[in-house]
Image (cartoon, rainbow, N blue to C red):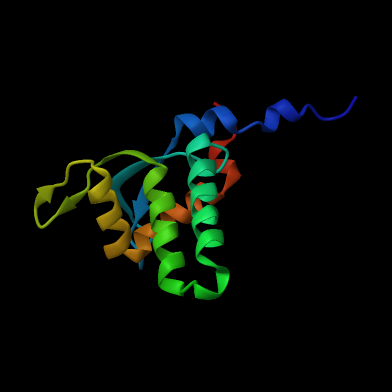
Length: 128
């Protein structure tokens, strides 16, 4: 008998989200900043990807600019961010809002990159 593919089903865990602790971009030290992120197999991720693709088709691929694609990535990551803990800026803990999440990813590209990498890694969503 072959391998049971259900053992590799990441749909449920992608929907529930998994926690990422951000690391210092130079030292890789944990920062005690935690983000709960949906995975690539979540409905939210797929819907946002389709939304982005539909906009691009409507706009015409020749008119796409790299800034537009970067903003799409930020919107996708924002849509997949469910909650956070420990996000502090200038001594003040920031509330979890989609606007603040978007600001974080636009302002701190190293954080955006870590989130993007985490969401894209299926192993983060394997098992309970």
